[in-house]
Amino acid sequence: MRRSIKITLLALGTVLGYGSAIYGMRYHRCHRDAFERHVADVCVDAANRAKTGQAPPQAAPPMPE
Image 1 (cartoon, rainbow, N blue to C red):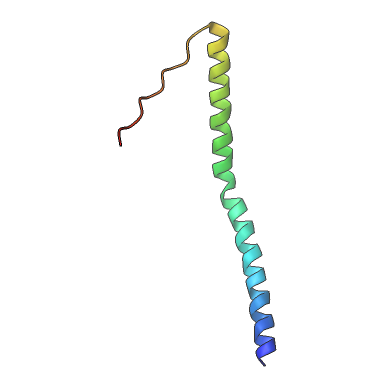
Image 2: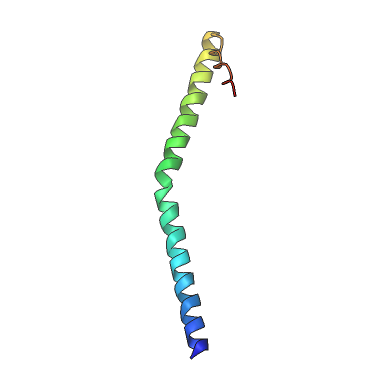
């Protein structure tokens, strides 16, 4: 009896774990696409500034702690 309960729980945990991983990969896909677009925009802006000879924008000063 105990052995069949352990096997059932382990099988259920495996199925739920894989299901959770697949769902997570599909959910985070839109965030990854947005990040890739952001990186591409930054690279294009840097290339355009290099082509025109403009200086890069100044970084914001650090926040005081």
